[in-house]
Image (tube, rainbow, N blue to C red; front, top):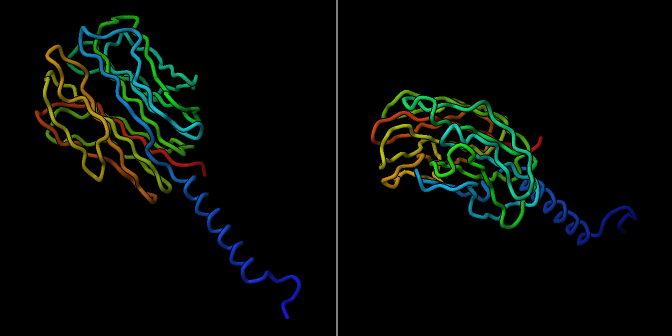
Length: 247
């Protein structure tokens, strides 16, 4: 006879399946991943203020967002979004070489952010409303921690390599490239297993701020970087972010 404190076989199997499903769901929620993304591009002389992104559908909670304000230093304002998130600058603005102090790029992140349908991002442009501006808007889902970030500005070369980031477990890596050459047509491709998701590399005749965004998922702790291979030879301001789930 079965003891009174033993589960019947079918009940025990059902409980095991529930536990397994719960564990799988918990694991899925603990792994970061790329969410929605878009790219604002204003060409020189054709911009407006404010610069507003196309709407994207983001998670209601649990995401981190990245954006940049790249263009005229006189338009260096903090981002705002349609869900009222708090944006924090990552380091200070980086000034482009060989343009005086005219152009710069600044990174921002919003952690533990709110989202939803038709999510938009905006930058006011007080200094030069019609001036060129490029601004990625990137969601990383289930991202509770900005584990590490690297920023560097290599001299012109065929291959430009980012700084290194170190993770303590699975992570989503986001790399951003900002070329500095006075060119209208260019190529750049990330290595090290990164996949490009957005770019502005074929500029109109009136010019713009060139950019490329790439992402890589890693499933274990480690130290990572990315190299960008492009033509023509130029320098680029580089960022690399590593996002992890809450521990």
